[in-house]
Amino acid sequence: MTVDRDKHSGAVSHFLDLARGIVPPMHPAGRPFVLGAAVATLLLRRLSRRAGVVGGLLTAWVAWFFREPARTTPTRPGIAVAPADGTVSHVVEAVPPAELGLGATPMTRISVFLSVFDVHVQRVPVTGAVRQVSYRPGKFLSADLDKASEDNERNAVWLTTEEGHDVVVVQIAGLVARRIVCDVAEGDRVAAGRTYGLIRFGSRVDLYVPRGSRVLVEAGQRTIGGETVLADLPEV
Image 1 (cartoon, rainbow, N blue to C red):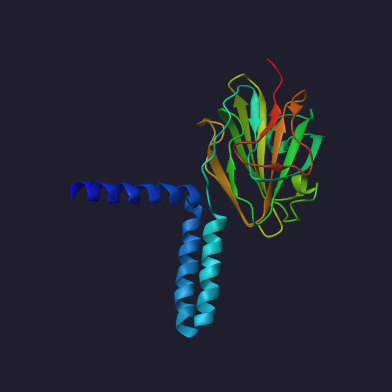
Image 2 (cartoon, rainbow, N blue to C red):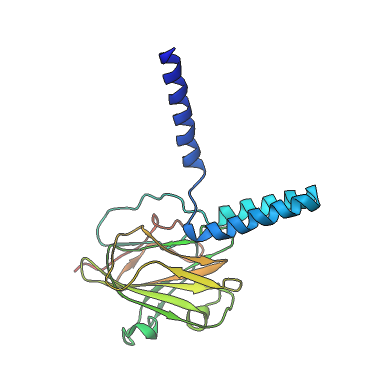
């Protein structure tokens, strides 16, 4: 009897492990939205079964939007990983956000556009220290436009790697995005691949790396946040 009970317990545990691997956890910022959608669904269900089904599907989509899947970040030194899931829209030379006070020397900017179907949490691109976090209000142009980097609402994080490189990652609000969440502050020590923020709904993330970095992606290429290596940083 004990053997059967142990086998049953082992089977349930195995099933739960498989479920966790398939259904990713949710970022905490999404819980109020999912709860609100679930309550609305219950109210709609009282009025109409069809409306309840639509509400249930919407609730499931909201939960899926705020997913935070586990990622395996490369440990090779001297690299910058993708801060977000999405599509590389631009690779250009550009001056980093003025509010950081890094001067007018251009850096290499790699822009990743996130559609509403992409994972919307942002991940730290390098291991190091947070030097500065600066939020700037702005417009809500379509995030795939190049001028969105200058005109749109944004939150810039300046990082210094363990090797001494300055790297900047910028969360940029998009056409329907109206909220940028950033969970790091000046002085924090951070590890590459760690989740540090979120943008709701549809957006863009810019990564600035030092000139002389070897960029490993091109416009049109898909990225996986925390896993895809975007650039090899210059040797110190």
